[in-house]
Image 1 (tube, rainbow, N blue to C red):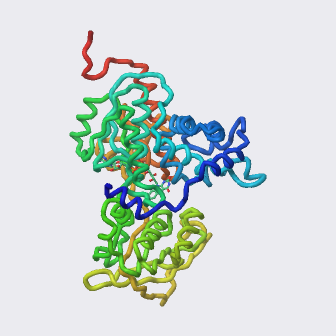
Image 2: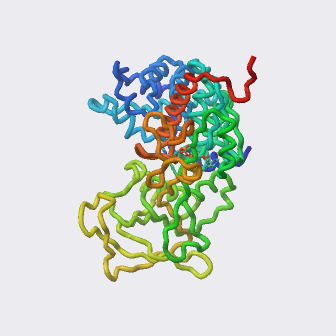
Image 3: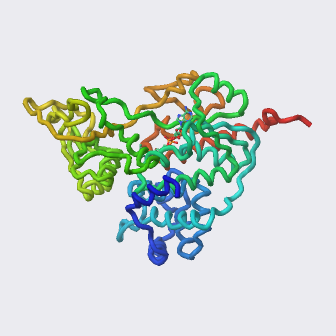
Length: 452
Ligand SMILES: Cc1cc2nc3c(=O)[nH]c(=O)nc-3n(C[C@H](O)[C@H](O)[C@H](O)COP(=O)(O)OP(=O)(O)OC[C@H]3O[C@@H](n4cnc5c(N)ncnc54)[C@H](O)[C@@H]3O)c2cc1C
């Protein structure tokens, strides 16, 4: 068994699948609304009543086809979409009982496709041309899949050894096993997309070569690393970036990762919850999340917060680290207490004050920084595309940058809302549609294609 699958087994999924019986009962709760509001809650516009009806009638393969027609990463989204805030928030059954469990039903259909093979997807209007995609995360794979379904020759250039982006390397296995995102990479490959792994495109000359060889380029490089916190001791052994830690749990034997009993996570977003619950599963007995604001300003979803508390993670609100201490590795973190100077405590922009003489020290064997990722406009600047506040600027409906035939999608952009897989997939799909509209009109012979 490969390492990925071994770690999938060692960190088993926390949400169990519905049984066939449970799925049928749940599917029968759907009212199959004519103008289904749940569809508008999904950025990829999956025909939710249709796939739920297909599940109710026992046709799981057709249900998977309906999902994948709209969202090629339906298996990932079934597991990690914040459905409570998206499709399920729009479900009319909220008024008389509770929302239909759309995400868990989607998982039933997609697990069936993973086990029994993916259904052939509906044909789309054909186009002709060559497209290069930089980055094999959700946004890049979505754009590539839609273009490949239309007959375009698509090649993805990916710096890592595998595709899937954060789905493969950044989402903890007990929420999304690695086999799920690797299945999606394989699905995209089967649509005819060619992957070039270990190919980082970060030199202007590489980019210019792509421009010469392809009719369009899609930049889908995600966000940057977790930034430095900027306090003394940050470079001591035992200080992790949350994303590096999660990646290690997916690519190395778990026995190689020793965190010690006392783990401190800095930040209170969804990534902090992943890091803290990961630390618990790796054997740490005392895991705390430090946040310089209060519970009302916490960026994590409520269900993530509850999940962390169920795992025994302690939250220390109004607590800010000022130094990491230790002789040759982390031994403690020095903190101060904070309070809002003025304004609403739930507003993350309200200014904070340090409470005088509030310093204290917490013992720590490991410190994990989960304070967000850096923006990633580097490639945009390199190629001379317009940027604003560290992000590449694109046309809101076509996703084209200020450079003709160069598009940008997903987290590297994130101008229209929160960073979510389903949004990255929707971006990729819309950019693919815009590329098709452009190339369909020109219908020029492909670059390198011989004239008759
Ligand atoms: C810890 C964590 C937990 C999350 N949990 C959730 C969740 O529960 N639900 C949810 O919906 N979203 C979640 N997200 C957000 C979600 O993962 C992202 O929104 C999504 O992955 C964005 O897709 P993307 O394709 O834009 O970027 P990425 O997934 O980052 O993919 C970008 C790809 O580009 C490659 N690349 C970068 N630069 C280059 C280059 N120069 N040349 C070649 N390749 C390059 C990278 O290696 C990577 O494969 C989470 C994010 C994190 C960090």
